[in-house]
Image (cartoon, rainbow, N blue to C red; front, side, top):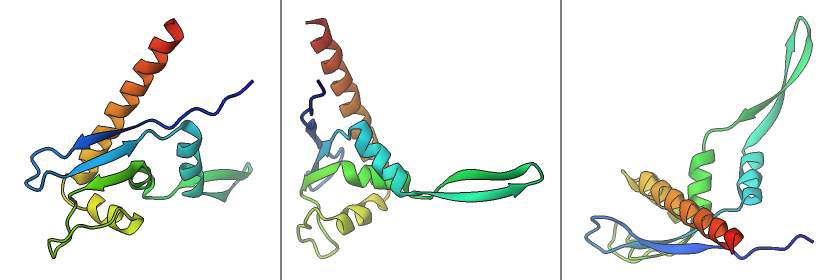
Length: 126
C-alpha cells in the first residue's frame, strides 16, 4: 500500500553573509518537481513532410521556479531599506536574481537531496 512520506527540510547558513542570513530548504518530491515542469512546459505542433509532430517546449525559468519552490523560510533577508523581508514568492524571485544567490540555493538543494538519499538507503538496509 502506498504511503505519503513526510517532507524533509533543513536550515542552511548563507556563506559569507554579513547579515548572517539563513534559509530553510525543503526537499522537493518527484511529483512536486514534475508539476512545476509540467506547468512551465507547453505543447506545440510542428508540421513536417512526414506529418504532424507533437513537441514539448520547456519555457525558461524552470530552474528558478524549482529553486523558489524549495525555499520554505528564511532569516535575515533584508530589503534595500535594510528591513527584514517576508519569505514571499515575489521576494524569493527578487533574491534569486541577486549575484550568487541562485547558485547558493541550488547547492543547498543538492546537499539536501544527497542527505535524503543517504537516509533512504540507510532505512532500506535496516
